[in-house]
Length: 104
Image 1: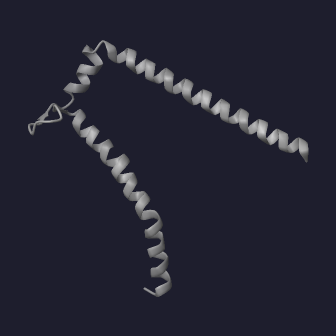
Image 2: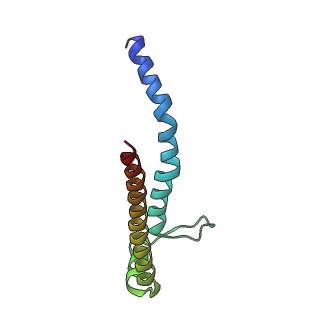
């Protein structure tokens, strides 16, 4: 491998490496740990972890009365948040570009 190619690879590693590391540490590792813990019965302190398979999910969907309320609240909050944020962003972009086009 010549010096120029090795230098290019090193530059890519220097710029992409920290971002990839933070993505793994902050996003991927907690996601997979949460997925693992959702299939267990663990209190967060003890060393004993009991594997429960899908029982946690069956309990949530069939016996937990507050699940549907929480789910719909979260869905409505997300939908309204996305719609309002995008409408506000589009309105601001329109106002800013319209003023500029009127000045030209």
